[in-house]
Image 1 (cartoon, rainbow, N blue to C red):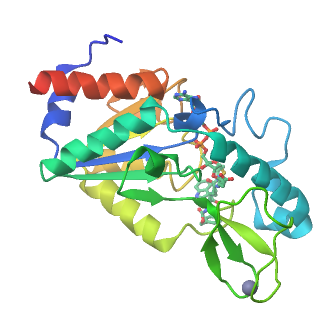
Image 2: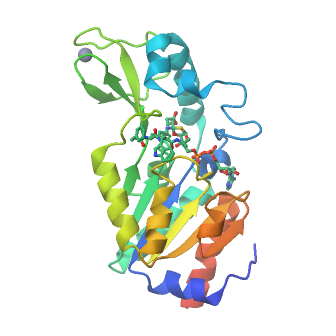
Length: 253
Ligand code: BJW
Ligand code: ZN
């Protein structure tokens, strides 16, 4: 895809020693995983409060687990797409020249890591972590199907829950600290494939802008963040991220 990107943006991509990226469900859409909002989204015919809150889980753990078991199965079948690959390649190139690349993701599917990204902060946890609601024990488990649903803790028999962050829950402290620091110190901050409607995730690009980063959005459609970034590109991340990176590499030569 031959796209003309603004030279000022390509120049910042070439020179930035610190790059931060925030991704959302749109980045995994081209791997076959559904986004949350909008037509065909996971929540189109579902009540968010039933599936993505601790109260919903307490009311009906079986229902919530059936949904997560289905999503785990989809994610197990999914492969990283060119958008994931471009971000991993960007990180490798930047770290090879001594820079820092921090990938902050709201996704719980693990596809960035599968694509080779190393410095990944999972803001909303991981769908592969099972956490005991009784003793707090945590383990990574990619089994599908799980032997019992809802699954129970091998140590204390309490209910296990997915190690994700639901509405009204605190984000992992280390993830917040790391994302905040990346937003405050990045010279370039990219936000990709997210509706920008969930906080605090949506605040990081705004913090980055206030702290002097050049800010960029890549998304299929306009979002509440579109008017707050320096450059907003409309399209698929699987096409635009590789094109953006290739353009910066070309202008590097
Ligand atoms: C493509 C594409 C392609 C498609 N290429 N693009 C400040 C103001 C107001 C409220 C709050 C606030 N601060 C906190 C809150 C409360 C709440 C919140 O944000 N509410 C808002 C809805 C208003 N936040 C919280 O509760 C957070 N906790 C917290 O803040 O704790 C402290 C606190 C507690 C209580 C009160 C106040 C403070 C926790 C948020 C947890 C979110 N959890 C979920 C589920 C995670 C587990 C799971 O995956 O199941 O996270 S909800 C869901 O939304 C999921 C996502 O990570 C998250 C964001 O969604 P995302 O990724 O943006 O997906 P979509 O579907 O929305 O958008 C996809 C986009 O991609 C679209 O725009 C498409 O066009 C695009 N797209 N294909 C490019 N190929
Ligand atoms: Zn336990």
